[in-house]
Length: 426
Image (tube, rainbow, N blue to C red):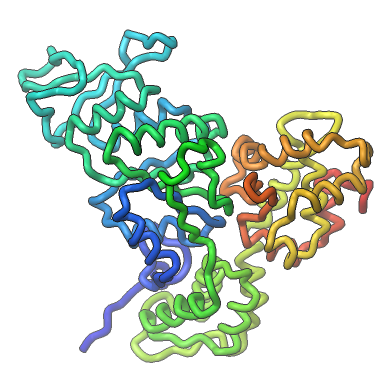
C-alpha cells in the first residue's frame, strides 16, 4: 500500500489551513464543541500563536461560518458593514444620513445569494437597475437592530467569527460589547470572538450585561503530553523520528508554546533535507541541541521585539511621567519564569515607584490608565501580534507572546534597558 506524500510545510510550522498534525485538547476542543450547542456567544482567547484559529477551524465547518478579520481602524459601523458583506450583501453608501449624522448604507444581495422573501421586515425600495424583484435596504450601519433585520431577511444561519478582535480600538470593542447583548436578546445569531489576551472576562469588563450571555474558552494552555503528541503525529505523517532527548529538551524549554515546537521541528527537518514524507523511516536531530533550534526560531522575531521595546517606551506622545517607558522596567528586570505568570499590579507599582523620579508621589491613577492602554498603544504602533496585555479583572500585566520570553532569556538586558531609555536604572 503506497504512502501518502505530505509536505513538511503542511505538517510542522504555520500553515493557512489546519495542520495535518493538529491535536485536539479535551479541555479546549471538547469545551468549544459543547458550548457551540448552547446558543451563546463564545470568546476564544489566549496568547499569540497558540492555536486559537486552528481550534475554530477544527470545530466548525467552513460552510457553517463567516469570518471577519478585524482592523485597528474600524468603528462599530465597519464591523456591521463587513458582517453584511460576508453574509452576501453588496454595500454602498447612501446619500441619506441618520439622526446622529452617520452616513446610511444601501444593502443589496450579491449575485448567487437567494433573493429576499415577499414579506420584508425591513423597509426598502425596489432597485431601478434590474428587472428582478429584489429589494435594496437602506440601513443605519451603527444600529444593531438594522443589522439583525437584514440578516433575518435572508435567513442567515451561520456562526459569525470575529478574528483579531484585540486589534480593534478600545472604544470600538466597548461599542461592540453593547451591540453583542442586542444580538443575543433579539436574534438567534451567535458570534465567535477570537482575541489575544489572557483575561477570561474581557468582554464582560466592557459590558457587564454580557454576564451569562458569553462563554469564554481558554485556548492558551498546552500540556507537555499534548505537545509531545503534536510531534509524534507529525512524525507518523512524515515517516520520521526525532531524537528522544531532542524532543524532551524542546518541550521543556519552549515555554509551552505550540508555535515554537512546530517551527523547531520544521527547521530541523529542512536542515536535514527532509521536505516531505520519507519512503523509509528517517531519524532526525540525533546531534541537535534543541535550545539552539529554539533560539533560531525566536531570533527571527528579534527585530520586531526590539522595535516593540523602542516604540512602546515612546508611548502615544512625549509626557513628563513617561509611564510606558516605566511599565517596561519591571518587565526587563524580571526573571522570565516569573514573567510567565504575569506581574500583579501591586508588584508593578512597587517596582516602578522604587526607581521612578516621582517615587512614592507617583499617582497610581496614571499607572492604571497607562496599563489599560497597553494593547491600544501596541496596535497604534502597528506591533502585530501584540506582545503584552493588561488583565483589568485580575490586575495583572501578562506577556502574550511566548517567543518574547525566550528572546528575553537570551538577550543582554543592559542593551534592552538602553533601548527603552532606562539608562538611569542600569
